[in-house]
Image 1 (tube, helix red, strand yellow):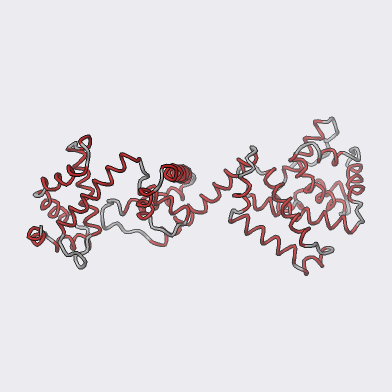
Image 2 (cartoon, rainbow, N blue to C red):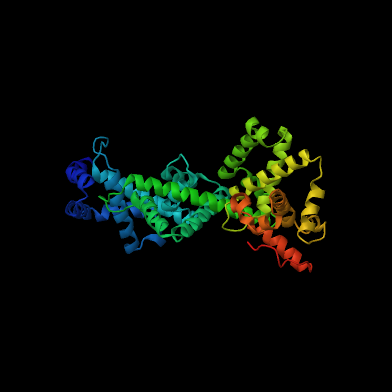
Length: 393
C-alpha cells in the first residue's frame, strides 16, 4: 500500500480541489480505474451478495471518488490519496449496507432538517448519530424529517422568491455529497435563504398546531404558547399593559394577575377565531387591547357595561339583550363579543352613533377582526332581526 500511495498523483488532487478542472478530474479518474479490482474487492468484503451488481458498484465508486477529492488533505495524510480513496470506498460501502438494513434518512434531507431547526450539530454528525439510535428513536427522527421535507416542498412552491431560495438550499444540502466543484454562491443570499425557510417552517408549525388545537387536540396548546412569535408578542403586550404611563393615560392600572388573565383569555380567543392565512399574533394583540379597554370601561362606569351595550343595541334597532345572547351562542361568538363591545363603545362616544357604525373600519383595532362584525350581522339575520341598515365589512 505504501509503494502504491507514493505513486498516487497527489498534486493532481490538490489542483482539482483548487480549480475544479474537468481535465484534472479525468486524469485522476483514469488513474483510479487501474485499481478497479482492488476497489471492488473492498466492496465485496462488506456488501452482501444482493448488492454486488456491477452498475450499482460503479455508482458507489464514482461517489467515493468525489467524496475523496473533496475531503483529502495531503498535509494531514500519512498514506496518500489511493489509500484515502479506498478508505472512503470502505466507508461508502458500509453506509450503503446499513442504509439498506435500516432505511435511514438521507444526508441531504437531514441538512434541510438542520436548517429548519437551527441545530448546532453539523448535518454529517446528525446523519452519523442516527446509526446509534434505537428503533423508536429512529422512527421518531424519520417522522420529524419527513414533516420538515413536506414543509420544504410547500415552501419551494409558494412563491417565485421561495423557489429561488429553495434552489440555493437544495444546492447547499447536496454540495458536500458530490456536486461539481467550482460552483460559486452568494453567501449572503444563501444565509437569507436559510432564514427565510426557517421563518416559513416556524409559521407552518404554528398553523398546524392551531389547526390541531381547533380540532380538539388540547396538547397542541403547549407548542402554540411557546412559539417564538407568540411568546415575543405576549411579552410585548405584558410590558405594554404594565407600563404606568400607558395605564395612567387610559384608566386605572391592572394588577399583575389581571394582566395575565387578559393575556390568557385573549390568546384562547385568538386561537378560537383564527382562520388560515391570518397572523395569529395580530389577532392576539387585538383581543388583548379590546379586553383591556372593556375592563377599564367597567371600572370607570362602576360595572355598567351591560347597560351601556344594551343601550347600543336599542339605538341600532335591536332588542337590548341581542349582543349578550349572541356572545353565548358559540365559542367564536364569545371571543368576538369583546371586539364588538369595544367597537360599539367607541362608536357610542362619537357625535353620530349610526354614522360611526357605517364608518366601522376606521376604528376597528388593527383592522384584523372584521369577521366579528360579519358574525354578529349573520347571527342577527339568522334570528330574523333587521340588519338592513348594518354596515357590511
